[in-house]
Length: 68
Length: 247
Image 1 (cartoon, rainbow over the protein chains, first blue to last red):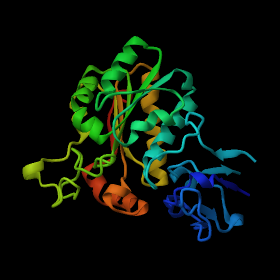
Image 2: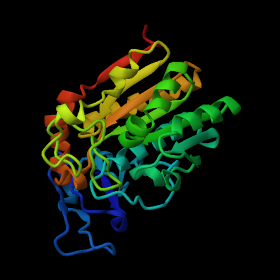
Image 3: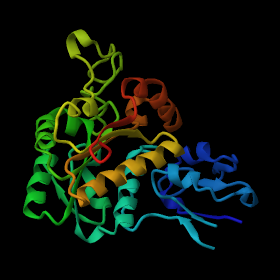
């Protein structure tokens, strides 16, 4: 079981993590905006996450912390 | 639960000012991870350039110096000669390193100064609004080449790794990119080796990172990473151009 933690205020909504996720379970929020006005990334199916950290490796803004 | 990935300690809490999807953030993190892993945070001195990464001194937790435009390798030379036990690196873009600072780059490499240079090649001037760089591709449309870069009037792109590989002194010259997970991992290895070389006193090491500029290329961040594969890499092939440790 892997756990992802997002620092949402740092997210710029570039979507590089969304494309990097091998399980396709990351998406930009359709309901939330952070203080800078970006749609932050969120995990749609937490139970599917394998903790590979591909998202965190591609994130230019160190938004994602990965625990496993 | 163990943490398998978190922000490296050698980055400060300052929020990157870079555009969404800009790969500067990835390369900053790779440099910081390297500093953490080699345990050299207390004795590392970074030299920030002029360009988008001009504010790099806000982001690295080590000592930083801001050099005037293009002069980072010259400043690094002075710092390293005055304090040979410290680890000195420069972090420069293509406008800084390959244009106004070409003389300092070539001279520092030719002298084989024991410093590490991280070179971000995104084929455009980012901070000033997308003008043509010495590394812009033929046919590339920029603010100052609106009909595409024409070699008859604007010349050909400068390939820094190949150029420096004609010199005898450099210890390590490598070109990497950060457009997917595998390439980011390879870039990390190259950057770590460039720092390791300095610790071992091997001499001048330069890592050219082929990067993206979604804003000035006029693309989405993901499309820009694909454009690296399609257009940049044929012009700037990845690989190790010099490795004295292997010879």
